[in-house]
Amino acid sequence: MPNVDEILRFCFNEIGKIESVRLFNSFLDKHPQYIQAWELTTTITLQPPAEKISFIIAFKPSFPYSMPEIYYNDTKYDYFPHIDYENRKFCLYEDEIAYDVGNPLILIITSVRRAKEIIIQGVSGKNSADFLSEIKSYWNISYNHEPTIEWWGWVHSLTLNKTSRYVNLWIFSKNKTLRCKGCIVEKDDAMPDYMQQLKSNYGCTCHEILYIGQLQLPDKPPYDISTNKLLSIVSKEDTLLIKRYINQCHSKTVIVFKLEQTNLLGGFYFEPINTNRKGFRPRVLTPFGVISKIEQNKKLPRILVDEYSSHRITIRTSGESSPHYKFVIAGLGSIGSNLCHFLNSANCPTFTLIDPDILSVDNIGRHLLGFNALYKHKVEGVKEYLKMIRPEQNISVFADSIESVLSKDAPLINKNDCLFLVTGNIMSELFIRKYQEEQLLTIPVFIIWLEPYGLAGHMVYLNPNSDLSKISLYSDQNTYLYKYNIIHKDEYNHSQNKFIKRDAGCNGAYTLYSNNDVMAFLSAIYPKINTLIRQKDSKSHCYRWNGDMSLAKKYQIRLVNEVSSFSLEEFSL
Image 1 (cartoon, helix red, strand yellow):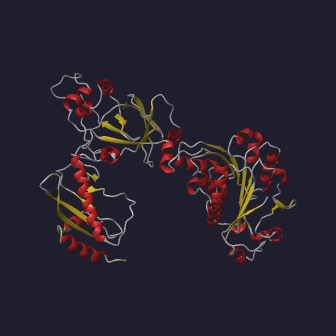
Image 2 (spheres, one colour):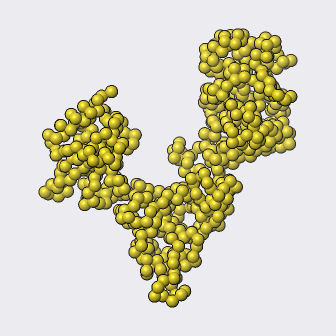
Image 3 (cartoon, one colour):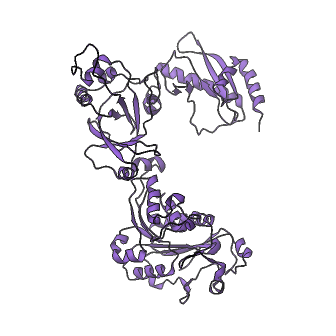
């Protein structure tokens, strides 16, 4: 690694040949993230003659693998974009910029040049549009010691149009752990699904607030807006609406509006308004009269509200809308529960979860769920886990067996895209196959399981469009041993104690493999699952993932044949 002190010493001397520069050690007292700071005095030409300006250039220990950071404390040319007005640091480059570290001196010179260009473009108005495109950065900061601007932790699901109207603000009333504090929704709409989920956990109170459809912010900061300024940038009709709303004396008095070029809401919070003032008879002053005539120049605390919608989240991730899938997961043990994590990446799919069991202490070593879900039905625990990620997600649960659910309501299962059978139970597999062959189950089925010690993992994909009657999965119809097992059949027939352990209870048997085996298997097989789901392949397929073959030697387990560890094979059905 290069010696940063030597690099900075060289650059300081070279810069000193063309500009006035001095070490600025006192800057480091309040900025311990830097190892060195300079004050550089240079010139800028807005119009002849050139004017002197001073920058502070600060360097992190990782320089030149991190760019120098430049501060500008003079307010003479305010306001211009690409500077944080709370700490006066320029935003010179995108965070993910890549550059050549071979010439640190050029990095410094280029950064100073970029800072000058930002000021010149700001003064000339050439980059004024950048204020609106970066409005989130400028709306959220304090300009002239106005009341503290709080991050309220609200989200919204409004239709952002030009119609002013009352909307509802739901605030979580029993929330001690959730950082999201509430949601703004349309007044006449039912509570969104995700709010229903959160309400059941945290409780909610409803407050009527006002949405202004057309509000024209100033082209540039500062955005420290008073009541007088607010009333000057809305229409006469909206002024009357604001007057009516303020005079209703709400417990939460909030006005919101669409921030241009975004799906964000900006807003203003009105603190409790005192109408009992000296010099005025009781009940003469109205709340609106106080804020428009007595406190008309008082700066209003500002609010910023993020949009929460499935569409926005999808566009923010993949960049385009994706198909919506519906999955049935039968069996929420170690493999089935963790499979939910993988499948959940498919654009917040609809899940039907089926499993009769309750999560016990013995399960959590390789299960998706942990201590906080102990003694819950696995279906309820996994549902809660998924809903904490996306509360609006559509999830149905059945604390029952797949045989029972399918027998009672086959159409319920058939309306989905596919069924994942992850019970590890041969009789469930035979039952499902019978339903498929009799065309009572009409969707594709994935059967997924692991062999002992994670020596192999298997996935069989049975598509109803293929001739399922001709597909045989077993080498022996008496033992029902899978024909592509990696462990030799003699081991299963004569040495099962190697593979099966038993806890107390009549159903306490379990197969030996680790959580690491589960995740390695699912990570290897999920790309195949993803392809089969998206391409809707009409054929049936089977795959085998081969685990750590050294374990077979360690435990003296006879294999069908030698294979490479952690390889994936496809076999013919």
